[in-house]
Amino acid sequence: MATASNTKLSISPMADRIVVKPLEEAEEMRGGLYIPDTAKEKPQQGTVVAVGPGRLNDDGVRIPMEVKTGDRVLYGKYTGTEVKLDGGDYLIVKETDVLAVL
Image (tube, rainbow, N blue to C red):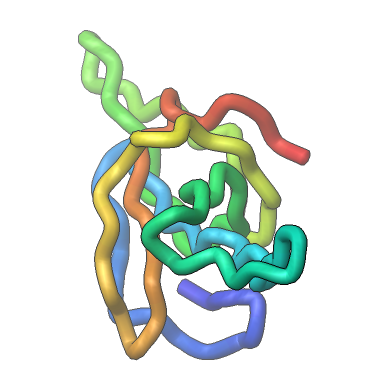
């Protein structure tokens, strides 16, 4: 699976799961004050870097994924599982947790 920078990730999501690279928010200054990481909002959008094969329906037929590698997506604030891979932070979410493709 390729990321946006064309490096290989050592992960293949199962079923209807996708791996998302959350977008980094720029460090903000409000009124001249530094906002620490603990006070920042979690990002809710990112770039899809890996896609599973899709889920199986009750008849055993695979349902293809609607999102693809490279899509920019919006997802729920507390959705998915955070993982560190190859020195980067990623999020593994189910396709049904994706709210929109940008």
